Image (tube, rainbow, N blue to C red):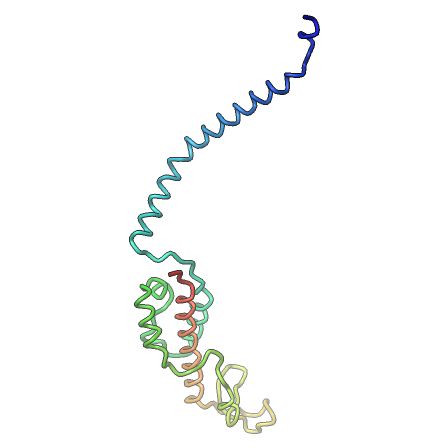
Amino acid sequence: MQNFIHDESGAVTVDWVVLTAALVGLGLAVLGVVSGGISGQSEQMSDVMEDGAIIRTAFTGNATSALAGACAAASCAGFTMGDDLKGMSTDALETLATDNAGLDGVATFDTASYDANLAQNGDGAWGTYADPADTDSAFTTNDDATADYNQRAANDAYKSAIAAEQGARVN
């Protein structure tokens, strides 16, 4: 009987059972507290998905900023801007992209046609220098060329913002 009383070989098993039961109880308590919130959030997500709403991450921040900057120097009348662009339905955005596909200008503006006869000064205006070899000589601005260049840049930025918004949508 003395050997049985002093034998500790089963103590680890008893400790393990008690600790495991405590952890299971703690897990059930956490589940009871959190389950209500999880259930509410999943029901809201289900409602949004059933309504056919667009679930997306918008990457258009830089594109719309570039568009706003380009519009500061050009006419952007009729352009759908910023949050309005993000809020459009996918079909409306596709129609907008199709309608504006013919805007003059390309993603990286080709300055070759301007460089052949004109130069761009430090302020971004296009025109001619009195001495083409000397950029410190008198500069005469060609307002038509400057306006055309700025409009093409705005058109390019607009098409880029539309394309960025289309690319950000998950169908």
